[in-house]
Image (cartoon, rainbow, N blue to C red; front, top):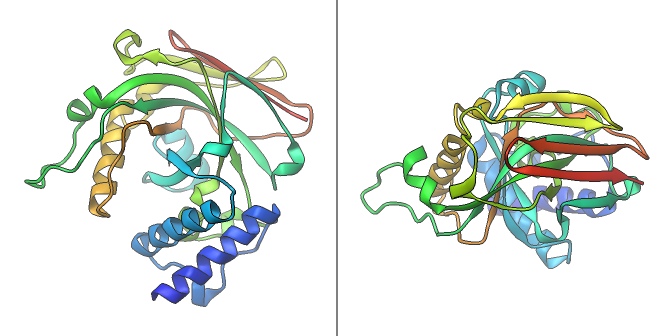
Length: 266
């Protein structure tokens, strides 16, 4: 797909996002055919949304890092989306249901990056051990996803990635310094909706350890001549299945030893 087609594809997705609409899919001539094209469209989408005043990218979300989400979506490898400053919230927030096409919620662990993760000059890969010192703090988090497709099950994976892989917003708990965090290989978390438990899982289900997901992201960005920067937030993946929500639903998440966050849809 040439640069003009990439711009056309990103333009369709940007208009759809700003107008809060759903579409059946991208036109075939504008549809990314592989991951390289998908992330090229995504980068262009971020630029267009920034220009439109929708928000600036302040980090990343990683989707499909746990077995439960891979099974739920039928996608068996991680995918990247953007996080925007205008959709980053803390502790507790009300969200207008009408600002979404079809919102859903997930329980996640998030990381605050304290140091740049610049690719190694010798080409060596990032590892769980090498990225750990860059994590300044961790959060419990709610990811608010948005299904902007008429039937996402019929949409190809590159198109889903081009549109930020359902990304829409986040609610973060109070940060916990990484040095004070519990053992992330086995810490458990849960999500409730209107006081009823809607899912539970372990942070160790995120590629075996959440920092494995962070290393995967750092390596994926390096392949595109990009890198994680100090001050960015990374959503590392959901430990529960996505739940679609309705007006007046109140969602709370908590990860043991880290904290909780809450969102109510009004």
